[in-house]
Amino acid sequence: MRSTADLASAGPAAHLDAGVWLHGVTREADRALLAATAGMDGAPVRAVPAAGLVAVVSTAPLTEYGEEALRRNLEDLAWLERAARAHHAVVAALSRAGAVVPARLATVHHDDARVAGQLAARRTELTALLDRLAGRDEWGVKGYVVPGATPRAAEPGGSGGAGAAYLRRRRAQLTAREEGQRIAADAAAAVHAALAGHAVAARRHPPQDRRLSGAPTAMVLNGAYLVGQEALAAFSRLVDTLAGRHPEIRLELTGPWPPYSFAEERPPEPALTVREPAC
Image 1 (cartoon, rainbow, N blue to C red):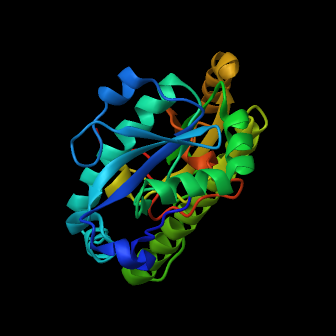
Image 2 (spheres, helix red, strand yellow):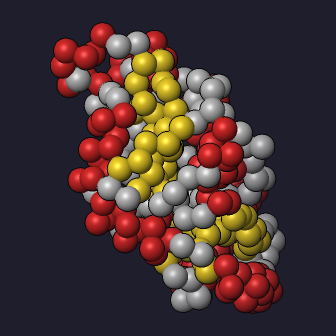
């Protein structure tokens, strides 16, 4: 689902003080689940049915979720984290109950009629996606460089005094670092190719910065894999096998996640996509 705010073109009805935040689309939504799941305003989420599909939505006060407010708030990391947590909690609850096409963060419509119109207009696409996602989950595999697991350059010899020796050591260190990065990158590519071959679909996202990943070493693989629930055990064993085969990177399997990476045929833009909110 696209990340959008259609409030600006709402016309005469724009005086309303609340919009509609879209969490995701399913074939059906259990009333008890909806009643037990809080939306963006803290109240239970609700269903908007149309065209044989169900959109699960929250009320979104325009003072916080209107077009201008969103533009400002999306630059506020603390606000963004809170919004991501709330949105993700709803999508995760829906995904545990069945197939769901998650909406990207900050998908806000003017009213229920606009949401229903989107369901009708995109019925064929959304139905195909729900068919594709049924019985499958998104799993993440991250790969981190393991210091010392790559060959070290030999200590350089030669003459020329302390200054020349220092330059030779620095050159050797840089060469070893570049070689280590190359080896880790090659290992990450090999791991991704192997995992993609055992998944229904795969995406390779840009590696996360250390400040976001919280890892002490660089991330070289940030893969997402759509895996059938019946194939999970074999996929997990393959991750373990690849970890032993490539000791130069440390592999971490995470999930299951709602299928954020596979909610569209093309890879989603990463900027506003809810991936893995901090616990």
